[in-house]
Length: 313
Length: 289
Image (cartoon, rainbow over all chains, first blue to last red; front, side, top):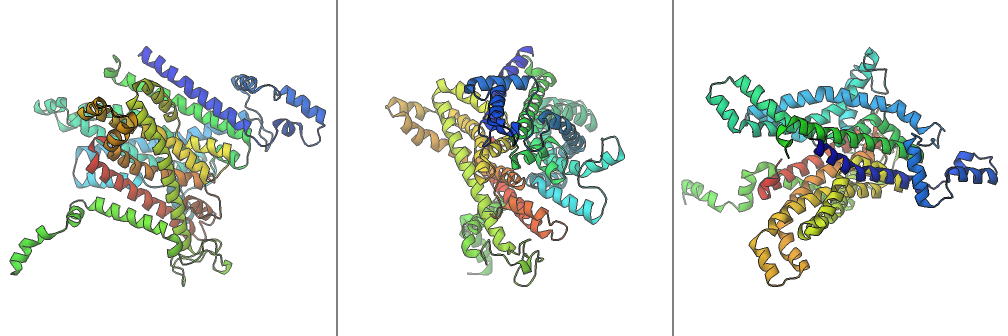
């Protein structure tokens, strides 16, 4: 257990280094000189030179990399070129809404996906199974933005049921809940298909196992077989597979935030890249990558905790 | 010959392809649809009724079914059929380029890892590092470094495909390496390159085709999302994701501008997913998840 966790932590080191290196490279290719930008248009050559020295821009590149890591460790991600706001301040304001959106999406899509997958797997080969399987194949082919635009068109525009731009407030207020509804339906909507498919496959594996045949032979009720012996074992691979889909969820979140003008990290990142705001782009990419690495780590350790068979290995 | 005799004789005369199509209707349908989509994309310049950049502002946002415009016109009065064909062309090329480039590099890595066991650990740990990033982050980072464009999308999707293909190829190459004919090939003193190309690669080809087809659908989905975000093809180039993004502004006045390219992306991804599934069932059942 401890050994596995340490191994995973060790594997994260090169990944982490890769993220930091990409962030650093990003700032190296900036076509504009950061010192000139920071000094402002009316600065004299001496002031620019002084800022250049302060920022360490006249040092060799490996020293600059060291300075960059040092600043990152102190939570200094620089200042936006566009509006001069510290990057960390913007990130702080957008991480909450992104987590909110992800939570609201998973909150309904995971239970529904597991339910659909269970129904399909238990009545394997039935009409219901075929309908769920067909839907999950089709659902896995829908672009996130297509679903989002359709929900905006029908629920937001035609029937005027729910707001479709921006965030109304925290999740626990009515406005906040209403404003997250359509983005969460969109992002959750594309997540149902993989969850349902994984649950079905995992359940079929378990239901074919010998302990389930034993349970049937000793006359255990079908409900008990399904819940106690089937689902309980099937959910272990489902948990990992859901964890492995976090990258997919992140991609969906970036698109969903853009479609619904949701003030999250993904939309901030896209906006920064499109407006060549390099420090902001660097900050958002680093934070998104770190978040992703962290979630992967947690899921991996969780998986081993859930499945005692893996602990010995 | 009596009618009854003719009936009896018919199954035997049925050509193999048709018999296969009747037994595997989904596979046959998806294969046919994929061929038609690729043909439409290749022949786009010949099939399109107008030039993709020809605009007539008097026709701007014309609804589908307007005289002479079966699918209507976009916000600049460009024929939607033309835009759709050229958009399909750009999107499919983006997908092929990414799968070929990423898959090719991935295959080389996979063969190297399987064939030279000393390289295996190092190469596969590098692949693990690449696998730790979701494709969307490659897309964001590469677009930030090189600037938005189709090239950035192809590059990021290729990078995201390399580790996946490397794993698949290594897996099936390791199985092939244990066969007797591999030992025999070595024993008669064949060169490494000859063994890899003549014996190892052909044995991994079916896994590579299955994975490539399934990956193609995913790559189209990811690539059109990046284009939709504005990180891929730039207007006025016709590309399905970029077209959907442009149409989004006019969603409430002329929904067809966004919906038609979206439906096209859905159809392309669905067709290649079904085709990939069918290929997997036929060629490589062990890949089934």
